[in-house]
Amino acid sequence: MNVIIAFGFPVAVLLGGGWVLDRLSGRASVIKQLTSAGRTIPQPLNMQWLGYGLESAWGYWFALQDEGRRAERKFLRLDLLFPFFYGGSLAASLWWVWLTLKKPFPLTWIVAPLAIALIADCAENLIQLNQLTRYRDVPRGNGNLQRPWIRAASCATVIKLWFMGGLYMGLGGLVWKILTEGAP
View (cartoon, rainbow, N blue to C red):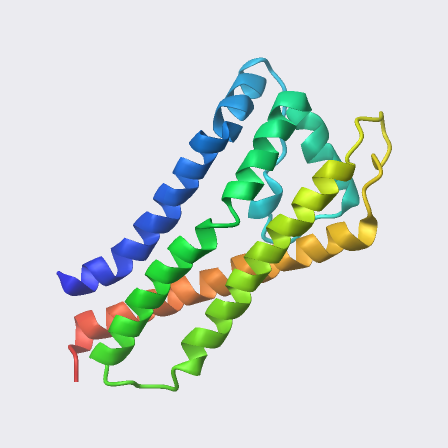
């Protein structure tokens, strides 16, 4: 049961926390209203595994309209705190599994990618917040967005998603090892 909790706890924090952030910020209801009205909303920037460019950022924020951009700002501010929750729950689970397996590899293999992912997540949010304040609703333009900063936010997004995905897969593999082979 402890092994299942070790994997389920950080997954529940990640998914549940994302759901809460969407609701608290109002982003979920705005996107639902816009899609119900027949508008197409691109995938949120923070979930684009292969990154995005200036045109994608502008297109996403343009599609959200004024109310959606206000909700997005609130989401990004709230999301500055979220890495501490999902990162903390993942760190606790990885540490517990690592100890259960009698420290099978150096702890830095967990700490370094987790720290990099959390720093990238905060950087992504701060850059997007800054660029969203520069956004101007102009037809077919870049809306005063800065291409190098959007690219930096995109790189941070990719780093965050791939590192966190790797850490969750690593946790799953370690949990599987405990389930199939038992703890040493």
